[in-house]
Image (cartoon, rainbow, N blue to C red; front, side, top):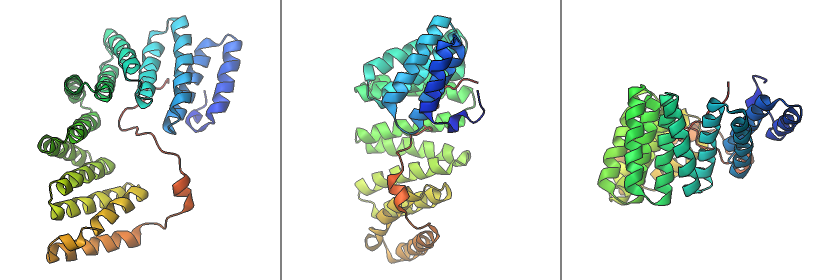
Length: 287
């Protein structure tokens, strides 16, 4: 397959996959269906991705290709999470996890466990989700996958926010922030600061909220996530008269600098497709 396959039109890939399947080139067909699914996932076309992964999985199962089966099964589970098919996702990811563990693929197993945490959380099984989050975190730590560690901790913090357990949420998200800073993940830092700002705002600490929103905006800007940088800046500006004068002066200067630095908004930004959060879960792609 072409090295530029990720930039191809998924509809074209599906045509090639069908042709390969008709020609008896099952392995190529399975890879093409999987690749098309990954592209659909990246543009939040989850129904189309789900169908692609199902087609790919069926072929791999016919071929008895265990590597292809567990990689594609994991991808299917991620699609099911995004479609809020919680029970199906749990079943699919349990099977993927078992296969990854059987083949001693610790990284794949950790990803599947992480997915199980998200699926259980979506289903409303908070305690089970937390057990999976902690297990995934331990495996990622063993594998020295600090990005995975930070993402898991961040999602745990977000889960506490949903439960309105502000103390646990703040403590947990601060841990994620620390890891994001250590690995210099500015978009992760921005997300953590933004969520901590929400918590501070809810707790009535407007000064802290404003400072965190400005820090988030700075990191979103450096990550070139300009639309969210603008949104967070607006929230910070709304608090300027609720903070001490010295804080207002200091933050006002930073806010004005960021506003001047941000590129002008275009209609294109409003029309952009919603992007899938690849930091949450990375797909298993065929080499």
